[in-house]
Amino acid sequence: MASQDQDNGRMKDRGGPPPAAPLSLAPPPRPVSAGLVLQQVFGGFLPQFGWLFLGFGMVFFWVFSVPETAVSLFRFAGELESTPGTVTACRATAMSEDDITVFAVKYSFETQGPGCRGTSYATGSCPVPGTAVTVEFPAGSPEHSRVQGLRSAPFGPLVLIVFLFPAVGLGFILAGLRSGILSGRLLSRGLPTQGSLVSKLPTSTKINDRTVYAMTFAFRDSFGVERSVTTRTHEPEVLEDESRENILYDPADPSRAVTVDSLPGRVRVGSSGSLEPAQPGRTLLVLAGPLAASALSAVLAWWRYLR
Image 1 (cartoon, rainbow, N blue to C red):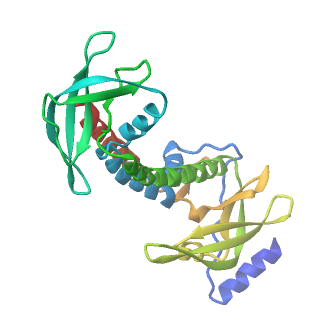
Image 2 (image 1 turned 180 degrees about the vertical axis):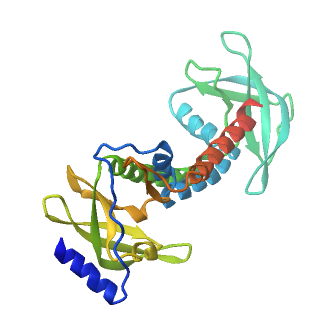
């Protein structure tokens, strides 16, 4: 301990940054405010980017009727029955495919029960009412039908590529959720220590035109065993302003650790040794993305199917 103080003193003499003030925390499991947990789960770059990408992708997901197309491909993949039908109406929709208008073709047909009606979609031409057509449907399910040669959804299978956008966003959200849950666990159950920067390597990733660095810190656990934790950040200055950084590690698995200054938002120690956000108002800010994306998706789903 005396040696560490001497090292810190020599670092100050050389004009280097001082070490971080040690965390004075309550024994684990310690209280962690809900606001701080929410900031960990939703406040990092991965979940924020994910919700933005998901919200953007869901616009195309609903506008291009991706669910209808996916269900149609599944529904008509099996055995089909067919029966004669008649076109009752045809109108141009507001949709187009390759700059060609998509038409909604309404038709009726007879089955063993009462007469049935349906709507299929075509591009390029609109059959006139009274045109005889062949209607097909999955065996035993005439309530799900289409005109043979036409589609039961406004767009063809290629539109399913749109699903990549929300899928990528969801991937970022899940990765951020995993990281946030781990951070929340360490805030509650982690043991505090301090570590020194031993490696700083640039990666091939950039965020906001800033290089992301892999910064490795060495620390010792409660048994004196040397461990390390690597943090990736595009703001390396946050982890370079102190000669020794505060670290929380899992006593059951010291390989699970986090540098406190790299956590989303700022962490503050309460009077009883609990942990809370230094900026409580930021909780509402980090929830804005998830709430906006969810609300937008709900409105678009209502517009497409329920209005």
